[in-house]
Image 1 (spheres, rainbow, N blue to C red):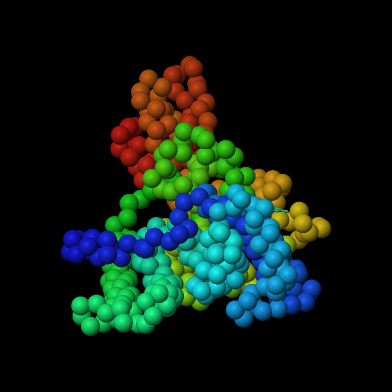
Image 2 (cartoon, rainbow, N blue to C red):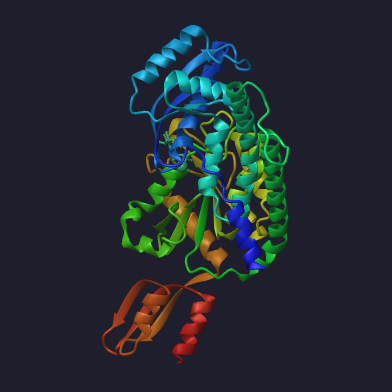
Length: 441
Ligand SMILES: Nc1nc2c(ncn2[C@@H]2O[C@H](COP(=O)(O)OP(=O)(O)O)[C@@H](O)[C@H]2O)c(=O)[nH]1
Ligand SMILES: [Mg+2]
């Protein structure tokens, strides 16, 4: 029942990671070998910057690209470059952490670098995992993250134990059970992993029931998806203006900080949800957690697929977004109505989309946004079954204020002679039904 479930949830509370709270990051991007890799490294740094900016209390203080010959070896940088790096970090006292943009660094290397630099050092796996964790809304997503943390805990454990061994001159750290410390901890981790897997299995069975119980929402929800750095946040800002400062946002405060109110050309209010960004070379262990954080997308009314069409890998990126979307078990009407947005067209001369239905914009310069809003409105009205109607109301009664409250009033055309008004509203079938019932004619 619910009690057992709650107990399990507290047991599976994610372990605290050192990345919680505000971080001011210095990004270090190792570049393999020859100069041809320079452009690739620049793209990787841009992605890392956008990744850090995903969380509102993280900032980038500086970034650097450094060549390395030893990507797979213990020493990541040559002596000279390591010195440059150490100097640079010393001159950045405000930095709280170094984000070393490699998929994984060993716990040992991490410790050595931290000793040399005097700040925390994080690899991509840890950073990405933390972002996923902050984006996990559903129980399932949280469990997926807990699962992805297991390998991290395992490798921390190994280092911790070898550290203990060095201190005590042997591995005779024996608990009452006759197990060594390492054996006990390894067993606990294995048990934790098993529990998480079982809980996930149970949730999957229950999920369809939960979904059916979900309440109908009043405002259409639009999920904005795409690769990290493609311009999702810039676009949402451009579409909503300073909506974050408007009191209306309190209506959505329960939803999430990444939800923002915007208005379509006919004054229909919609909520834009900034989803977690796709990443190039997502570590394999994290694919499950990534999809789980996107699960909520299934409950939106419309998906905007934003592409950075100036990116050299834009075609592959599109393919991988579409393939993830297909695997999310989205309702087919949602999958079929995806609006493809081609962003950053200011970087390409005379851009013409290859896809006939795509909308070319520059979120940064505000180009193409009116077309986009119109397209969003058309699609949202269709998806939500809302209609734009003109209703005649008697001004002596409460009809007009009822409509203001329950629907979106666009225009009121008063006829002074007979005390009525023609009211143009955006209204759903169900609200219209209630209106007719309240105010029979
Ligand atoms: N040139 C250009 N840059 C853009 C455009 N839209 C976003 N950017 C830049 O791309 C980077 C990533 O944007 P952001 O909105 O944070 O991407 P997100 O990771 O998808 O949320 C930022 O430096 C933006 O200024 C655009 O239309 N043109
Ligand atoms: Mg963003």
